[in-house]
Image (cartoon, rainbow, N blue to C red; front, side, top):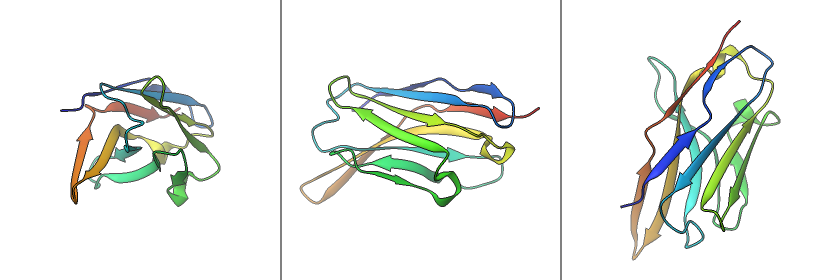
Amino acid sequence: QVQLVESGGGLVQPGGSLRLSCAASTSIASGYFMGWYRQAPGKERELVANTTPGGIPNYADSVKGRFTISRDNAKNTISLQMNSLKPEDTAVYYCHAERWRLAKKYDYWGQGTQVTVSS
């Protein structure tokens, strides 16, 4: 079982920045796709950004140019730098880890961290 622990959420004004971090209890270098999802009240959970084991990023259109995902395989951590935040970015943000082994998908979730963008 992989444990994921997020940190860094909080309240920020529109246009501000926040950095989320996620620490994994396993070696993420061993084939883990890592990413961030978010869920706003009354909405489905959606992908924000993810990264391949080799570090290639992928972003939702709504955050391209504003958010940057990074991973440190040596420290088993990923981060999400969020700039130019908008009220519509308000949500609970979840760290996610995914790996395929023998044609079976294994995925894990953190407990979530609240991000609120409001003046």
